[in-house]
Amino acid sequence: MTPRELVGERYDDALGMVRIVPAATREAFIAALTTPDPTSIAAPTRVLREGDPLSIDITLEAEHWDESVLWTVTDVLGNVKAGTVPLRDTPVVKFVQRGDKTVDTRRVTLPFTVASNVYRATLDVRTYGHAGIDIIAAPQRAYLPPGDMRVWGLAVQLYTLRSQRNWGIGDFGDLVRICEIAGDAGASLVGINPLHASHRSDPESASPYAPTSRRFLNWLAIDIEALPEARDPDVQHYIASVSDDVAALRAKPFVDYTGVAMVKAPALKLCFAALSGARTEGFASYVAAGGEALKRFAIHEALVARYGRNAAHWPKRCARPRAKPWPCLPAKNRARSISPCTCSGARANSSTASRRQPKRTASRCTATSPSASNPAAPKRGADPTTSRARASARRPICSIRTAKTGACRRSRR
Image 1: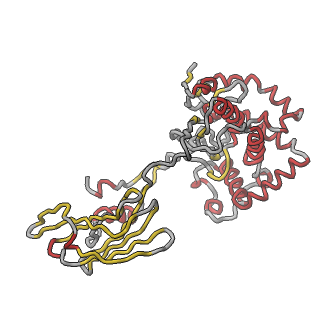
Image 2 (image 1 turned 90 degrees about the horizontal axis):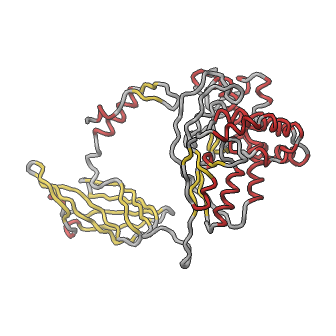
Image 3 (image 1 turned 60 degrees about the horizontal axis):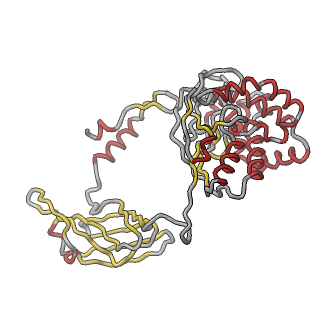
């Protein structure tokens, strides 16, 4: 295919909207693919192993091999080494005939041994050619703990964990329990998927790799009944009133994100209303520490709930990245923008989980999860946490009971 065929004229964005590529942008990509740098004498990157000599293949017309190459190598700390190498003393790797001219590729070895690091090299052969090269030197082998100790662990997609106490989706309470099970079996770590904040107005857009924010946590992972405020009579009454709904959510073969959001959102609002004493002060401190980032995140969530995820439907004064969005919201929305679903429950639940963490559980986690589907957004202004707007998601659930053996089976009922 030609570069013009490779660069498309339109694409579908994350919300399913068709976007037309600006003509200038498309032409710039086509030009970059069509016109390589005619004076570059080497590939733009070179990957080596730690301890290898720094060798680079240089391609020039054979008549220029009486020249010398001026080289520099700079490390990440800014330390520079430089020198010259006569090209006639370097071995020929390959050659090709282009018309009446012979073009040779020679391997130039610089008097430099690379450590595990990244470097920037430059090569110049007078006016005949030059190159800027990114050098990556990888370790000889992956890191291993000192001595003969070997470690193992489990990779867990938190949302898939099934238990008799969660609300239809794996939560922080389940994470504590799976860490206890893994620790008792001798595991040193439990790797989990990213827990980035999901789209509150569109729970079915649940991919942890396309979140609404990577700074804040997913409120659906909160273990409601582990919160101190869950002991409040109003919260207890609510939990009892939705017990049948929660049992039905647990029984589903796939995670029903909308259903989970519908039962968890009211519970968190009641927990927020029950805050008192030191917990109220702690929440105020958390909001203050979150600063502008937390404030803008909360405002963004309120704007999305009111106008939908597609910013093209927002008032123009709200769509600008640096705009002050408060005037875009009615007064009643301003007061509740920083809500329990935004931050307070996640903060409380995280601290509860950390206090209950067993001694033998992991001290680190890795983010590993297959990408989730990203269905189209609901109708503008719809809020699935208060009205069922979407069908249930298609996520397999892993039985927590099989985690004792390190196995994870898909459950369909």
